[in-house]
Structure formats: structure tokens, C-alpha cells
Length: 235
Image 1: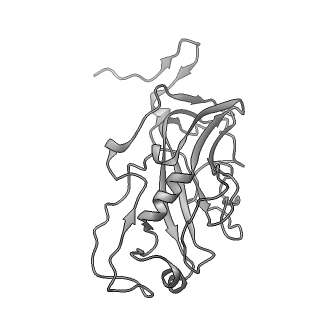
Image 2: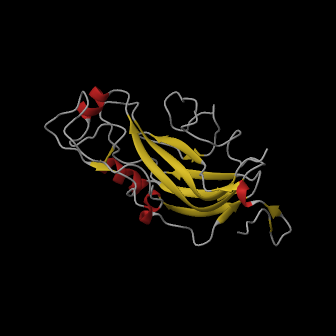
Image 3: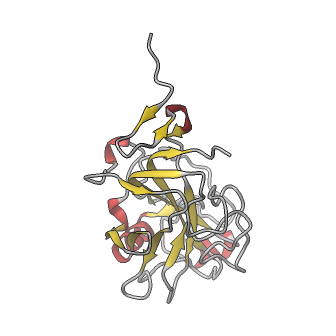
């Protein structure tokens, strides 16, 4: 059976299919209650500061797999962006404070309450900027469904600080079905060494009524993933 080892593009470049992968780049930001500035995903690499986090804390591999200092694609990589996906998770520093002051039906972190998910979707725009020239998209966060994850199966077990007599009301940015995923009409190219930004913007200056109870260190973690094909590092 014939196999393509090299493809010559119309512009003369030669590419090897085995150098390309569907494995995404990903980057995480943290959304707090109250007044908040825009948060830039892919603005940092491992060891950098996670936007919106308490401290702020230093990024590890579970926060991002972007190499370098951020805001720019490494010279030995390339992206064709078909879309973006945004997953929402919740963290709390104290389950006692978190549950004591929050609304009813609060699930254990990292689950997010349905009302908090809707509040984030209502007040958050996702903007994509390439080469610092223009915004290639500016859409509400709900447009970029996560389309991955684990379907919640609810049982009676709850954490310390929870009430066994209360039910849970869990939300997510879309379901785990790939059918929720939306694509750009045409893919956007991010060339090697080119600047790109994915910005979570809050036109009202905050996510209104975002509820974490008495836990001031609680956050909504929004992990942004690229969808498309990516030329893996070749050197």
C-alpha cells in the first residue's frame, strides 16, 4: 500500500505527514468573583504565572503544554486551528466555607454548579487574535463547548462540609458529546514563531453573581484547548 512520506505544498514548502498531530495545545486561566481583568490563555509556559490564580501560582504541565515564554508559537511548531474548546472546573481552598455560604445544590469541587456555569457563559467572551493584527473571532464562551470529559453519575456520597440531605445541580460548558463541537468556517493558521492570543474578556468587568460562599480563594478554572492539527516540535 502506498504511503506519503513527504508532501510539497503550493508555496514550495515540503512537509512530512508524520510531523503533524491532532494532539492539542492547552492553557488554563482562573476566574475569580468580583471585578476581574481580561485573562490571557497561552500567555505563559511551564513555570510562568497562571492568570487569575491565587498567589499567583506557577504553572505546571497540567496547566499548559505550551513551550517558551508564552504569547508566541515556538519556531519549530505550527497550528491549523479548526476551533477552540473550553472546559470549566471549580477549585476551593475550604469545603467548609465553600459549602456553608454557597447556594443550595452545591456539588463537590471540581464540579461546578449549574448557576455558576450559566453566569460564566453569560458574561465571558472568548477572543482569538493572531499575529497581533486583528481578532479572528469574538464569541460568548458557550460557543466553544468542551465536547470532552466525564459524564456525571450522581450518588449519595458527599464530602465533608456537604449536606447529605441536599441534591446536586451540576453544570458544564456543553456535554461530553463530540456532536456539541463547533468548527470555524475555515481553519486559521498560526505560523512558526507567530504571536497568538486567546483572551477571556469580561465586558461587564466581572462575572456577575459568581457564587463561592465564604471561600475567597475559590476559582473557576477554564482550560482552553486548540482543535485542529499541529506540527509537533521537530528539534
